[in-house]
Length: 317
Ligand SMILES: Nc1ncnc2c1ncn2[C@@H]1O[C@H](COP(=O)(O)OP(=O)(O)OP(=O)(O)O)[C@@H](O)[C@H]1O
Ligand code: SF4
Ligand SMILES: [Mg+2]
Image (cartoon, rainbow, N blue to C red; front, side, top):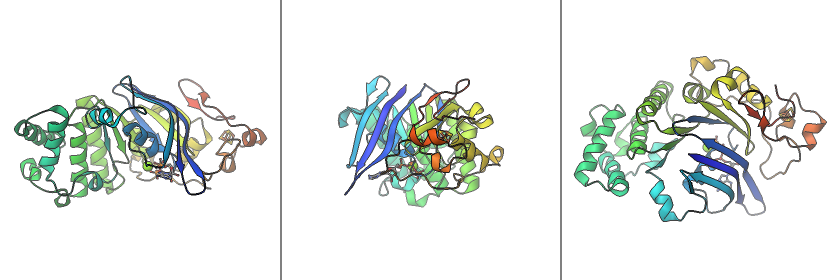
């Protein structure tokens, strides 16, 4: 359904070009939930913003992103607008920035249906109200008449999730959907996403620092490091037996994974390389206990590494 091939994203800056995403390929099947993890700055958000046509103006993009058979990178804005919000929806970390502050919840939800599904305002408002109930908002009729700032953070995120589902999209991209929420609300939002996934059968790309959430929701996990995919494997396999030393470090630093209460990316020793720097070998070499001379000169390619797992490492675990 979504097929990203050889995606490269660079940003023009005053003196240099910064490579944020380097040759990323990944795919999502209908109904599948893929977790995308990796340290801050590893290129997770930019990869999916490219699919939404929402990259910064200074971005240079190459490669291909096909969604339901259509090439999105070459698509005109009018075509992207048809796909965005209807077949492809995105939920952001901070719903306050994606909700319109001067429109009531009811009006902005109904507007989505009027614009994308051609419903009348009356029918759209009815469906918006149903959706608020579906995403477990109590007293939904009153909430419809309120403005986003009158709702709590958790409630706004539920509204965002509801809004993203209004047109029954085939794919929802959830970018850190819980990181602005406190721990109890956070668990509720993940449970809501799981329930919505069962109900609407959409695919989810869950970009998250929260390995607990990824563990709870994802069928497959993609690990990114310094703009590249370094490991991709079924969730059960990756949590039981990570192949890439970077993935193993992430999991080692997250001992309470089964408690599913982690809400930040565990920090491992050292820093990722400067994105403006071009390294000949493995980008993880400076932080890797298994690194040898080969790792420093030859970049490992993403290859099959036991079962259905793929890892980009000369010495996988
Ligand atoms: N408009 C821009 N101009 C220059 N660099 C940018 C721009 N937008 C993003 N970047 C850079 O692209 C890189 C990848 O960013 P991205 O937002 O994809 O990271 P991320 O993996 O989502 O991190 P986080 O976990 O912090 O959200 C970062 O180094 C970031 O600074
Ligand atoms: S290629 Fe070498 S440096 Fe990179 S992760 Fe594998 S062992 Fe470590
Ligand atoms: Mg991000």
